Image 1 (cartoon, rainbow, N blue to C red):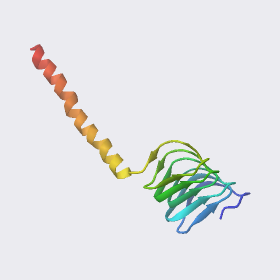
Image 2: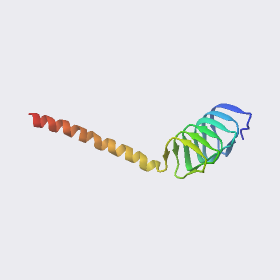
Image 3: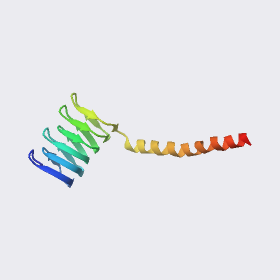
Image 4: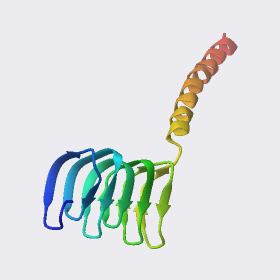
Length: 131
């Protein structure tokens, strides 16, 4: 646990659950484990954990392998990527939510591939019509 009077600047990683009641700035990586940001917790970091529970404040992107939960007292400014997201009544959130990251990345790459040939065809077609 990171207590309410503790401040950390830097990267945090580990192989166990972590509760933050203090202030953290940097990155937090807990693969396969849970991160809880308590009511007095203030995190300015990108976060990656199996489960992320927020009762305090997080500024940064959040990746939850299993789920992300923002309680009624939670405040988040950043993007969330997780298959399950819960925003309790009263939670404050500013950012985007991606609940299907695998599909989102394939959607982004397919239009880019299709856009290139269509961009070439009108230019070639215009040149043929002109000549």
